[in-house]
Length: 178
Image (tube, rainbow, N blue to C red; front, side, top):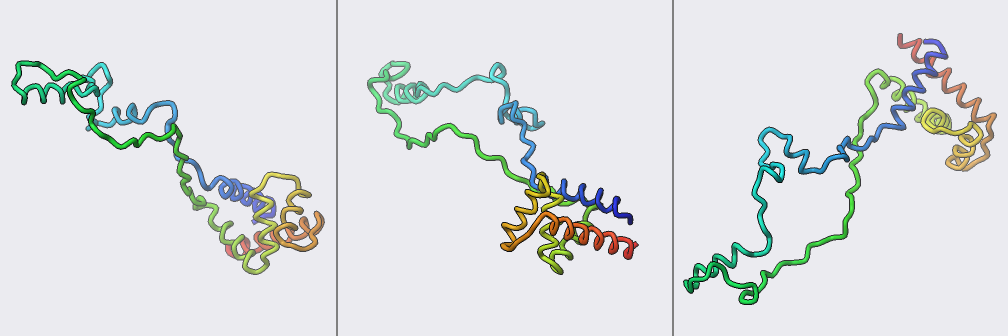
């Protein structure tokens, strides 16, 4: 495999690696219950198709009046105690979206394996490859990032040399495997 083909595969691998964890594809434009109504066996219906349940305790007061047998349809509000309930209200918030690991595409797994082999042989060189193809910045900034992680002196020229060696090694391995 030619050097340019390897660079193109590394770019695709870097894009897949950087975007590996994607947010769930929740449709934010519709309410959750609206989505449930679309399911075939859903019991949820639009408001105009169902009778809304009143939450003022009227049915309970009617039940109490029936048990008292005083001829009233319902017990007045002042004559009954409110139903105790725990205050489970919470401030309004959106739960964070769950990140889903999409993995590396099958056609780029060989690149992922090659980068891992490089990282085992030379952690610095593996860090350079991973930084080059997964982070969008200038090579000077990338060299500074590697220097911060590496902990020693690391210049832009050293960064470029290590990158060239890593690309040559991946190209050599891919031509040997083919």
